[in-house]
Image (cartoon, rainbow, N blue to C red):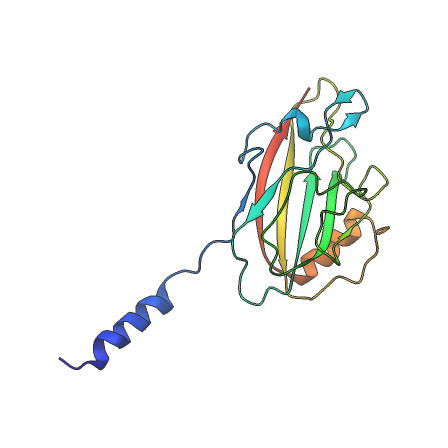
Length: 182
């Protein structure tokens, strides 16, 4: 047998195998599960601890130059949803954020990362607090792999404007969707 054939066959198998999936995980909740009270907002009648969840993700796709994390409620009764957390310009080698990283008073985010304004009106994490008696809302947690080194946006940029820029620079996304109702 020609010794080149087994090597060629192995190379073809590797080239044909799909790339590892880009996945997002949290020890605080799983996909489609309820969000724990520690992650719920403290205000508007909610009494949670308003702690951003711990998040981790797998290796992003090749070409990733920076990352971003968002939490968005498409069910908010606003006509445009509700941005609960927006953080961008995370270094490409970041593989997770600890619980509480969304507290703008604590320096737990990597250097250069920016938390921008949520629909609460300020930067930083704001947990779920849907209207009393409303159906449980979905909270879409997304890590975005971006093809740019950074987004040239400030901490005063709205979630919608960051979202526009994220979509323009996106290579891949990984999501978890949690639920919360009261």
